[in-house]
Amino acid sequence: MGWLLSQNGHYIEQKLSLHQWTGFLLVLLSGLGWLFHSGILQSTKILIRSNSVLILLLLFIVGHLGGSLTHGENYLYEHAPDPIKKVFVSKTKAPLVKTPVDSVQVYEQLIFPLFEAKCIACHNQEISRGGLVMSEVSGLFKGGKSGAAIVSKNLEKSLAFNRVIRTQEDEKFMPPTGTPLSYEEIQLLEWWITAGAPLETSLAELTAPKGIQKLLLSKYALDTRPKPWFEKVELPSIPEEKLLLLEQHQFSYRTLSAANNLLDIRFLGNEISEKELSVLEPIAPYITWLNLSNSKLTSEAFETIRKMENLTRLQLQQNPLKTFQLSSLTSLEHLEILNLHSTQVDDGVFDLVRAVGSLKKVYLWNTRVTPRQLENQKSLFQTTELVGLLE
Ligand code: HEC
Image 1 (cartoon, rainbow, N blue to C red):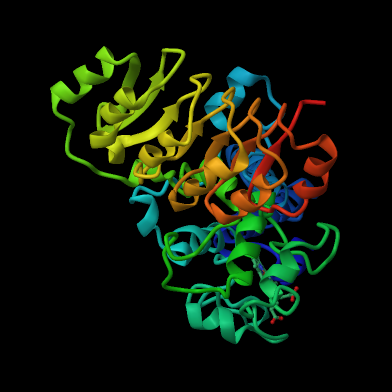
Image 2: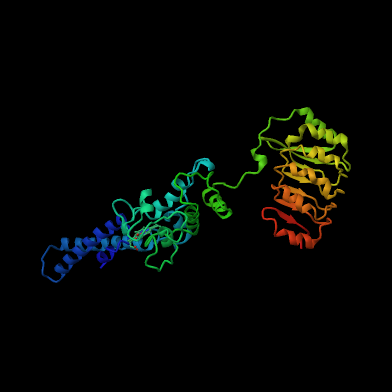
């Protein structure tokens, strides 16, 4: 019966053969045992006994191999107490890819390993179940008896996708035995096919949607999230005396990191004048975070601020600013966060935010923008979050 079952192709050939041959041997020795027992065959006591011991041993071995085939390799220990489990259960982890994130090849290093681990035992040059060869790229697109396994940008027609998302009870579910693809693996496959199933594309060339970015980070330790601007800028270090000047003029400052010379600057006084602004002027390209909140800011300051080409965060809250004074901010190409709470900006500010395309977050509570105006505008901005009062 087992031999008949093995003909359906639902078992991995290499794993099957040992079970199959030990199984045949068991049948043979048991037959022999029966002949001895019924007296049809005569033998010495020692031979008959050794035959029985062998049968008993084989029964364990064949049974265990069969169990591993149908229930997976870890079936014996997977519900055992933890200390035992630790010793025996082998965990299959997503392989860590050890190349710089950008140069990771999507097909070769992320997709093919899934096929290799879960499909190729039954879909290769020698054993090609359903006529499908997955070990060669050409085989994927050519497909098997029922059609292509991968159809670029078409999930429905891609049989390799279609077969892994069925329920496990479905007789077409793949793989028919062994560990199914995990939810993450299915997501990766889906992303790759919808992106056109490219074969020689690296992660840098293929944009990953947010969900895939998260998955790549958590399962493969691959950080594909876009880098903030300030991590990309490289500038020579600033002369010590310029930093000293900052301190003498009521600014606190720090560099972003030991390796990054860009500055995070905060004005500590309560009224900023031309004198202080002139200290900022010569180091303008170095300033990436700037906090000038509550410093009685006037239009003059913007002459200096507009020169800060690498500015990414600007805090202008609690200043008597009106919308028209901010117009020069549109020249800042990398500004991501703008805090305008408790200023006098009105609904004209929405046009400004639109004009500074790089903005991700704008704080607008306690301004002349009414909560209703804010609510109405929110849906019009897709990449910028407008923050009003917390409800
Ligand atoms: C244990 C063996 C085995 C494994 C592992 C396996 N398959 Fe199959 N596969 C089969 C058999 C047998 C058939 C033919 C019967 C059928 O169509 O269901 C088949 C057929 C297919 C077909 C249809 C081919 C055609 O054109 O008719 C596709 C597509 C497929 N498999 C995809 C996969 C994918 C994807 C994986 C990995 C997630 C996988 N298989 C893993 C045994 C296996």
